[in-house]
Length: 473
Length: 160
Image 1 (tube, each protein chain N blue to C red):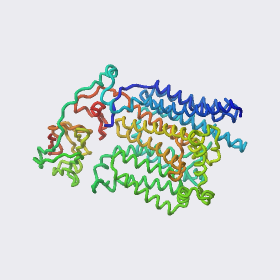
Image 2 (cartoon, helix red, strand yellow):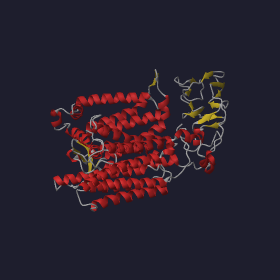
Image 3 (spheres, rainbow over the protein chains, first blue to last red):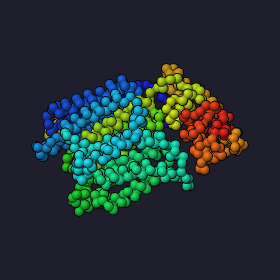
Image 4 (cartoon, rainbow over the protein chains, first blue to last red):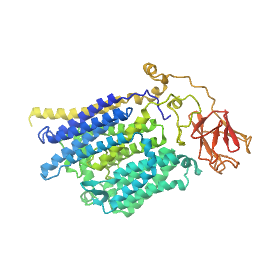
């Protein structure tokens, strides 16, 4: 059964030890990235180390006071990933400056964004005591998501490399779609936890499949239209896959009906077919995936496969143990510090290093799913599942694209890629997962119930609410 | 680069990979307790039980699983239905598993569903409510065999 009985224990001290270890990894990566290229312990080294250390400790202290029982491994993992990303971005800056002394470095900006993102996560942890409050904003989040997704299409929007997903905000650019994935997850979780039973029960049964009623399909059709809209108007394949995948997973988790997954896959099939027929950029992506090594495809611009193939060459150059941080040439790949950061890390840390990084992501996602299993309210379960899944899906789409398992799409690697909006969104996701894990692990405030007919716990929410005691026995 | 410098670089390079894996493995180590789901759910260690009396294992009450649903009052009195592993929808709607010909029942009134070894009843937002053993349902509750469930003028019971 879903609830697992363990002795409630805060485990903040374990988190502290792991956090110190993670900071050691982050800071030594930062040192190695600069070693031999700039004088050791330069200003930037201290700026980066102190920012990451202080902000990590800040979250740790807040967790001690506000969410004592939160999962102890999430924060160290995220700090390590963020630190490795910062080190790689700084290292690529140094290479770029060698070639072009006027190159504006990306790393200081990324360190500032890290501070902003962790600060936002800290504020969220303090302001939002309980994730269930978010349930009240179910439909507001739908409206907010719609506004965020439409913003880039307004005159505020900017078009970079053919994709219209940025807006300019005074000091820089921002990708509202990154925040929209959180608000959409909140909407789906609220909507599905309320209407789950109706969607579950209604509908005809054909063979082993229970087909949903047509009107229950409406939100799914809406999610499909949103994804297609993002694909057509913003020309962003990655976000489009992300939004639809998020909805499919959440409805599957809510109803455990395979028919939804089959319908969703059929809709994706239709979408892919029309996208291939109608949009040249999608067709080019596909072509540069299948025929990546053909010279005419490699040299084609735009839509050539040079980026992917360069990344693959880099990975091959890295081999099993890598060239060592700062010793390879990942700077030859275009967008090495954002889309292709895994290829850069793969070249310099080798298979062994990249597998360690993938393991960190796997543990992070599994802790999110674990929080979903442990928490007792349906909304929290769905939200934690959906949010952890967005991290997993992003990793899959990015790493799969770089290793040429699937066509390359422009999604960011969570916590690592250069880009403030993605970092901000992912840190907010971490804050939410930490809050949900806290409700999952916190000891029940009252004595375990012995009566079969307890008092209603208010709310009248038609969700099975059982104590840990009943379910595990 | 001098030989000593090269050696240092190699040591740093492998040292970093080792450090990365130490982080991964110690993270997994910290979760060891959590990962042992099967044995952890049954009982804590002796010390855990001493510190948390809640965890003490109680013998599970012997409970005969319900196998039949019987209508004891109302227009359909006497009808019985064998329970399988799938949920049962109660109401006036034609798609309901047990179609109640009861003017006081809603179309999709309530549902019974199995969870673990017991059956739960849940009201689906009916007009007149569902009563389990005299109490109106506000959320899903477990149903023991022999406890009457009232829907409109119909009363049903689970039987072993």
